[in-house]
Image 1 (cartoon, rainbow, N blue to C red):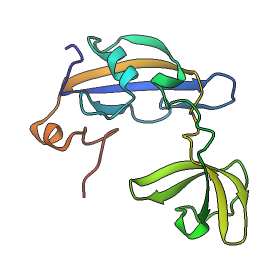
Image 2: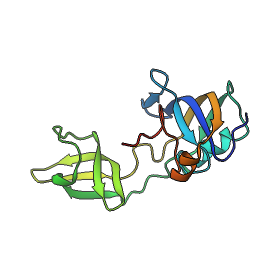
Image 3: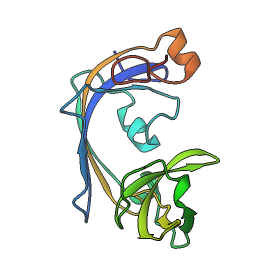
Image 4: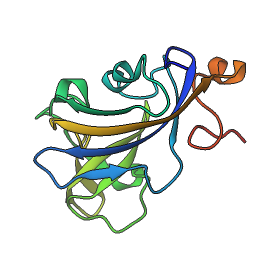
Length: 161
């Protein structure tokens, strides 16, 4: 079955960012489950998956504009510590989640004060060239409920309560 809109793709990935020691992988757990055509993954990754099938492997390099965008130098903000979702002891360089009007967002701590924290609100991977290794495990039709909700359900997908 080929990957196209409204199909659920189960895949493993390895991600590294050029010029940094950042890496992540799904290989130690369940494959990621993604409903195609509903803006659940980076558009360039979704485009590269279209037409593929279970068992396919692909290597993909994304320029910053295809990934998390270019770094914005004006993206430094001073935020009251109470707006952070993390209750850990804050240190410069930590990635934290901040409550915003658009929902939780990742930001990097630059400086910690008594009541406020200076954050770089660029995505931690903004400005980076991203290298993906993707292994397509399986492809299936999305259920009516998944298509209506706009995301995959179950293992590797979204869980409702």
